[in-house]
Length: 463
Image (cartoon, rainbow, N blue to C red; front, side):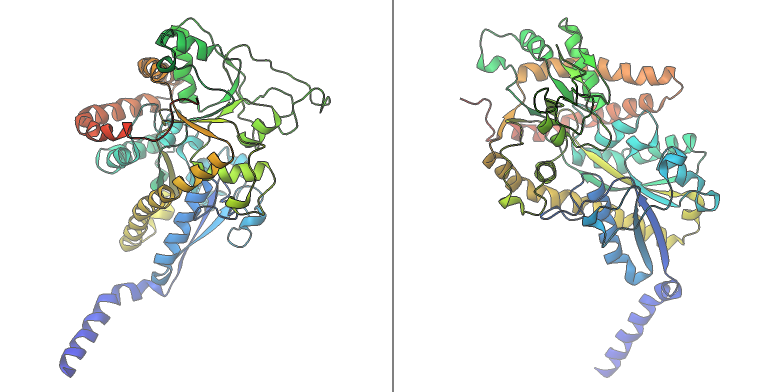
């Protein structure tokens, strides 16, 4: 028995010897995030922000696993550190505006006045395909399908190639979070639905939707699909970019209550806008500056509704959201089926790591993708119940409108990609062609699970 114990002890020492040789010198990785985690009361692990939270969750999980092995991440915030994050987050390393974005800062590296690592989403890269990679494409792959494409369908290799071409091979990208389908929109009224109105054709329903005089906040890819579908039924939608109904998107938009904030945009059809910097859509809805919007998963909606109504000191269950929430929320994430968060390294900095260090970081990043998705999925049922208690009616998108949007999707996205090509950026074209090819190749199996889509308790209308 004594001899066996000695053998086991020697084997243990040998097994851990490779780590001892470099663990004595801690590898500290300073990483700057474009978004604050926002660790509000009852927020998801990492924080309430749909991008900053999962990014911070990766840092927490990575340090929990890798710190004993000599690797430690230190997270910095690009803007002012929120008071809820002060215990965990440090001030910025570089001014991202000085470089244009964090991706350009990382391509420079700290020896050239930039930084060595950043957490962000590809939409912040300045490349045309960024939004399509960050959130998927309308009617695109689900989270598990997207993970298959990223890791084993050539997606990560293509993304790296696009980054190599754009940033002179100075970036290394590693996915760290992949969250599931989001709610597809809060609305002040129900959308026209042929299933509940036999006299309404799909085309008429689409036209009625396009003619709704609403200012809506939607990602560009989805907005372009809606725009294309509307044009096919003879309706031209409007676009106001970052603007909202009134001049100041942060202030109450009501001529009587706040005459100092004049109305600037009066919608007559669907009008895309409301991407005002630094203002959350829930706040703009509450102030009357926009009429409809999407953001993320129900858990994040709860947190941002608390933020907009100044109830961050309350637990989710204790907050009264009834006065600020929109009455209808539509399910069916046709517009943004996933959200991907990534870690980007300066290549010279990354190449300075040992092979073991690189493999450990990649392994923890892949584990973080599974962990983040599972954690968030486990919380959504309770969040939906809290929204419904506040007066929200959850509905499915009308199938008649979805059919029109699906038909318009290829042309709408092709126009987006081809317009970027004309400006010298072929990344959207490459990404669309590759993702569609992978989806087509595997679609028969992807459809196996779709029968479960019909087994939902969501209402189709409010009686």
